[in-house]
Length: 55
Figure 1: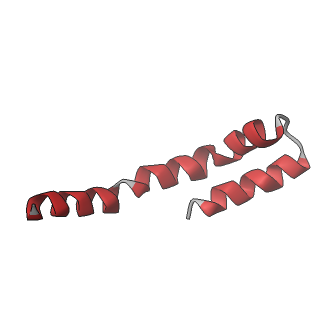
Figure 2: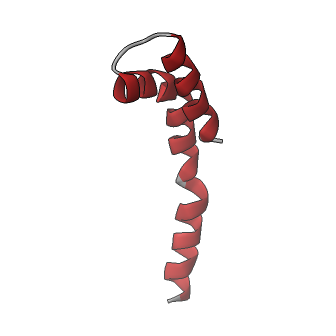
Figure 3: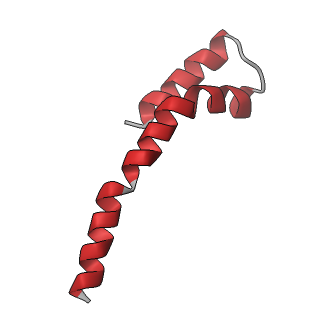
């Protein structure tokens, strides 16, 4: 039981690192495409906020 809790704590401390990197690198393009369907000034502002929210 203790080993399972320890493993879970390790996973929870390591798993957010790749997710944060993916959100900061792919967040602007993903947000512009999904939320607005186009790329313009408003989409750029929204995508920057999505990339910053990864941190």
